[in-house]
Image (cartoon, rainbow, N blue to C red; front, side, top):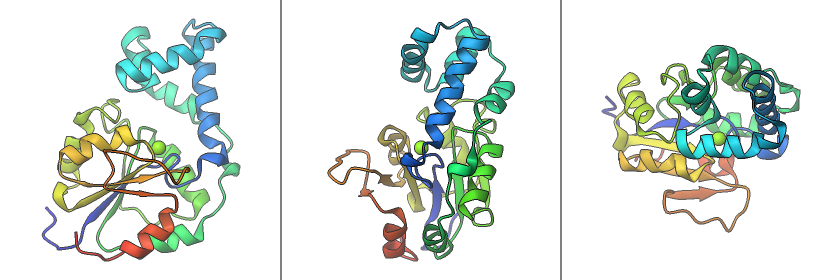
Length: 216
Ligand SMILES: [Mg+2]
């Protein structure tokens, strides 16, 4: 339990610690589509609508495939994360801002730990996080299902009211906010509004710099 006045930090990975326009996550999405057509009998023309339906009904493509297609999760994760990480540029400015934060930093991702390690190595952030809570550890139940949020609080001994959660998807902030966490939405468009976000920023490094060490 966090008895300090300073918050612990949870960070989403994809499109939060690296920019959307790197295209990395589009590569992952394309690999998901390829997996569906190659191994799950989904027609190419149905890939997008199937991904959307799985996301809405089950929370993710993987959860949908596990429920409806008996897909084995680990081979799926290896396949979809077989992408070109060279598109991720080192980000020393964000690394410095993260290093300046008081208390503990964790990754909370719907991807795999191997994917997180590959991304963090490219960003120059491989030594900045205490642990990664990945989709395997979540029992393959993805954000925004509340279950992994409860689990991460327990596993990492977080005090939710002294935890700040940083994400690029507003819907993933809602369960964190319900637990009492402070929520930060990272966006590309400056005029974004969100009920789930306590803070909204287009510049995570700048935002962290302004809030580093601030008591929660
Ligand atoms: Mg994300």
